[in-house]
Length: 360
Image (cartoon, rainbow, N blue to C red; front, side, top):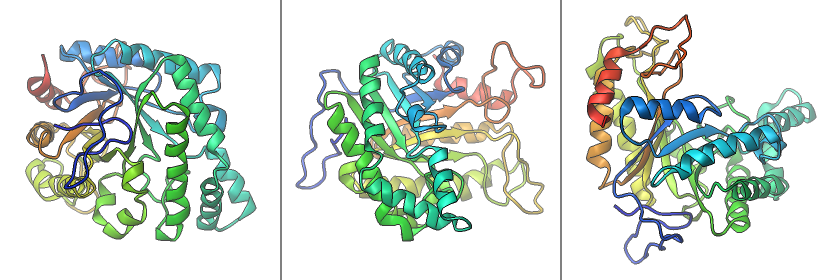
């Protein structure tokens, strides 16, 4: 399987792939990752101990509370980065998987004050500013601070879940903001690459499952092949108008089709596919009367996801997949000490299936 670092892409006809800049051998299969709270590498280590096998990818979040947080200038954010660094450096093929804001929440709040009552215009003007390079100093400092800390292998989910309209400060509201939004993305990648040319930075363009239902929006938000290393999809066991226990139809008629669309998009652009967030969804249930369904404790979803990843790992290829072990919603591994309002295993059947498929 041809995986890559930074600018390298999967070779296409007449276009050779750029070799990786480091001597470390690339993984020959997909990498397992876990998110288990923000700034808590010890929780990922706990998951790893439970699974009895290495988990080389640790996912964490770059806070969006300020530009200083995004740039990791604060002692708190640098402390989080050092914890992630220690985890990554203790693993063969270790990778940090950073969920990265394109802008902080206060920046959008500022533009909303400038353009009251028109959120789309506020966002457009904010990204027109970003497209000029006005925010590049913050992206540069992020790269330099991570390099100084000693974290040199990382995948950045720049503007993750961008298709969730009005959800995030960086949400892509529609094709009307295509030029400004995608140019801001290019500014981020270009700036970080230039600041730390010897680091193994990779950039993951990552909508949720719903993003792949609208090709017009997908294409409008695409920053260009030279600025994306990995194409991602977040996909949980929720979606479709299916009763809670209708595991089979929800998988075959809903989840599988979204994965197939994401795979096709990644292949069309010569990129590996990632699944930066996946998991059971315990807080929603559909009784068949409408709304989104959720599988609750759904071992079938776990089994089919892992089977699909394994089946496509070489041919697509699939780079990494991160199980989102969030307490009270997606977790299949308990958190010690476990909160009193949660049972030791929220999804015991899904947990058992995960360990039987991937455990050591």
